[in-house]
Image (cartoon, rainbow, N blue to C red; front, top):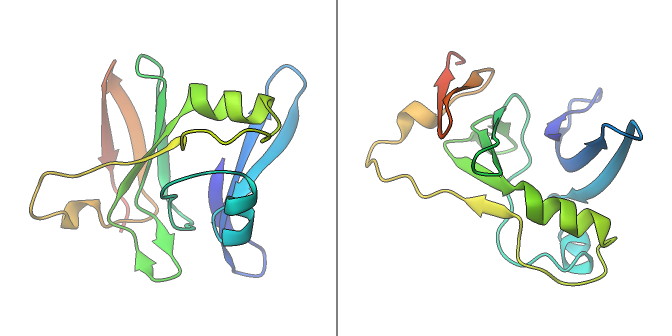
Length: 137
């Protein structure tokens, strides 16, 4: 689970992993805390904190994607991937060793990316390597 908004209305940038066997949540990181990112040995870019984004998992690729949402600076016009295998290895290693970033900032080839600028939308997997983004504002 990534981001959201707090009861106080603060936009969040935290990442949590849920273990379906133990039924426990594990805190991984908070993208708002740059000191923590250094401490966790994560190199490279991470997504901006956001609420009202959409996510979808593509099992064939081992990647989950996060699109759009509301950031502290306005509506996001981007797509981020998260490599699940790397994330799991990082959590299981208890953050001891530096490793390649599990976040992937996706490059969008279209000159006009305004269709990505949305919040309160949904994403759905429609083929083994394709998802759609629908609705929102």
